[in-house]
Image (cartoon, rainbow, N blue to C red; front, side, top):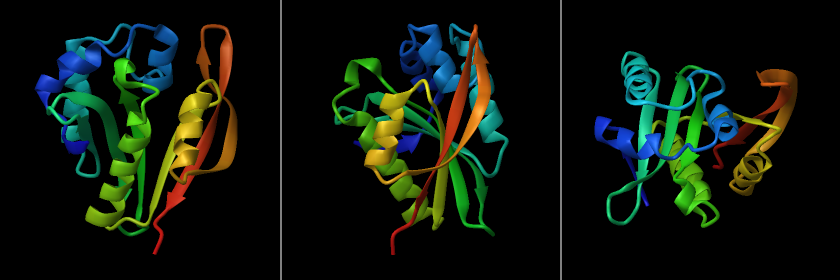
Length: 167
């Protein structure tokens, strides 16, 4: 697997990765409307392109086909921190270690290329598979924020998770 900057041509892949509104909301945290479309992704890319402390990346398989997506944002070079989010893997590839590989690649990129010492992310309590994935690559839960997001009649808690660079 490898990472490269997210490109407009990746839109056609990510649009097809969401066939369930609840999973979509876990990914988008209400920033986008279901179903995802080209216009929303264009705004997504533009928002990140205009932010000097944020990037979108795609994970490619051995054939160069996008199989994952992730965002780095809130990079703070003085505090040596960064946040990752919008993490998603092609549903056809789930359960095969691709999510773990994506999170490993992105944290290595942040630690080794950006020279950042701490990475944070949020995950909803409704997404225990993702939480387990993040824990398996060294993220630790630090806090829980109660009723942080409302989806239909549900109130979701979210966990703040942190991984520090190992020296």
